[in-house]
Image (cartoon, rainbow, N blue to C red; front, side, top):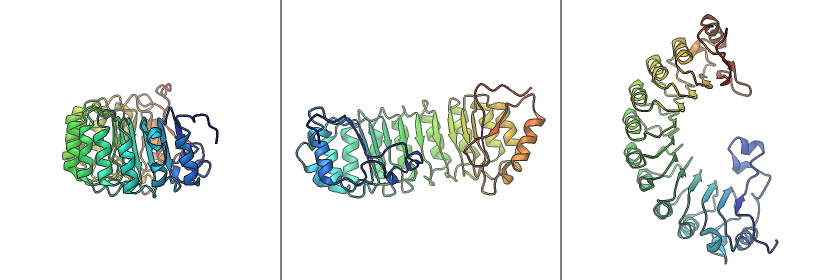
Length: 343
């Protein structure tokens, strides 16, 4: 390896292959997945004197605690801004603790499908509370409410993902949203304990929110959606897929209140009828993506693609032209922003 300092960004996956495009970077075979601990020790050593600003590792078994103990590791990681660890199974409690000791100015902290050590996470959140803007704990099933409560000290946080953190209790989520009022993106997908009270807290405390994902939060009802409509009319993306309690009444409220919505996902909301489609098409002028898939291939929602086509033809003077999205499953429709209403 050259004696010249390396680039400040190290990413173990290519970002271009099918696995990376599907956001399963741990399956990428194109870059550094199988490199040895000697390789990673050399990477850290030769990153000085400037050090690294980004470290993104996916399933890198060679990057273990011995690498973090090596000469130059502290100098290489002390200025880190972005830390992403994706299915790095060798990152045990000791390794995460060493990283926490070294990093004090992170802007992004991303642990994906990791068995996160509680003490290390607490230290990372505490030491980086003022600088953190993104916390992503996707698929970290061992994370519990007491762990998540530490996020509340990150007052400048803009993006929080608790996707799949199903062991986190509602009280902890409410505590976080009450303290992180600058959040613009919140992903609670598969956090299935979430109910209308949590949604009401989100609506009341996050005035800057633009993107909300509540997929499979099946306890959420029309009442929860009503609170969103009353307090967050500026939402740009809303995912209510598999919120099976929702009815046409909720969608009518969305269509009437969220005029700036660009993406709306309602896959698996089996109580919806063609009335919901009409409400959406008439009331959401900026919408560019609509996901209406259901488990039985759309029929339970709008009667199938033929029904949607009939609906558009019937209200031709009012509805923009919708098309089945290329490369998407049946029931995902898009329209281009520049396409005007059909003549």
